[in-house]
Image 1 (tube, one colour):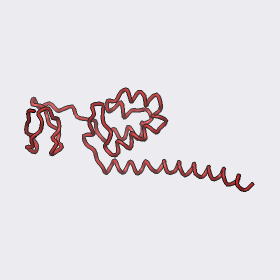
Image 2 (image 1 turned 180 degrees about the vertical axis):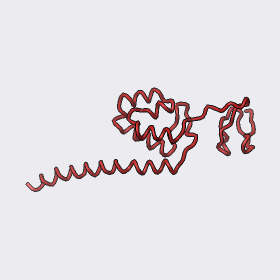
Image 3 (image 1 turned 45 degrees about the horizontal axis):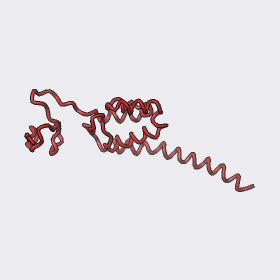
Image 4 (image 1 turned 60 degrees about the horizontal axis):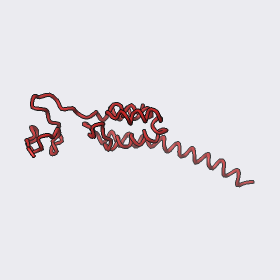
Length: 141
């Protein structure tokens, strides 16, 4: 396997590599044109947060067939789109070419994940209260 040196840190990497395994920097082609970079983390996260049930984040990242499936099922009734949001928050989501995000920020990802738990907790609390309201009057009679 042919090897080359990373222009940023000098580490030896495979000739076909587009990103240095040592310094995690993206490598440019010989004619100085930028490499086809993966989608941006923040844009994908915002698409998933606000338009996740329509699969817009999947279209943005190049996962067109899955985006169509999410569009037709409204994000799997919200469950599929919420799972995608969790994957995006923890940088486990891959684009259409199997790449991770270029500029992942763990602080933003974990913060959005924690904020996303608030509506889930409120929904569970509401279901529990309705369940108790149905059970308690039935137990008294």
